Image (cartoon, rainbow, N blue to C red; front, top):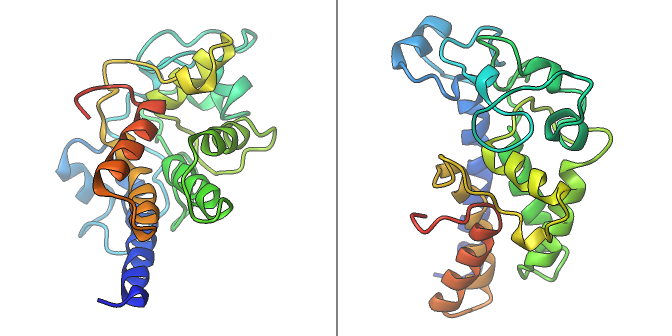
Length: 225
């Protein structure tokens, strides 16, 4: 297989990640498949906006100051959600059956895929090589921007735990938090670009595996992953 075909397939794989995320976005965390058909008769067949009502949302039970579930403090108390990340979005967290991706339009990507884009750009701007320090710098800048650079309302546990630790003065490379759901599929979202970029540079498989694991543990320090 020529280098051109390999690069084309790699590009297509990454593009498909964004397409799949946007297609799935309106029914993220619909635990009962029948609820998908209630909200979207016939199922998801095209890009759809997030519905107002989410039948199985537990967003109102999630902590706004750490990973996992926990208390949502009054709005006059500084918190991770609303003051450090997701600025202006905390008011939507305490509402029952709130959609995790409130008001997102058809075809828009969720926060995790915007973080994937941050990683891809960090690699592209570093001569096609992965750097954990560059990624962390860009990730922190992106997540803490005064004007949010993404349309999402929700941040998974790992984001909230990371920035709770960062606010305590913990070095960024040590901010990965352990919660009940650290070993989750969200940790795998940003792995593919690293593997693709480094293998295209003819790194050894063992070295690429090491880089991917090191990156994963920045936000998901769990041996089960």
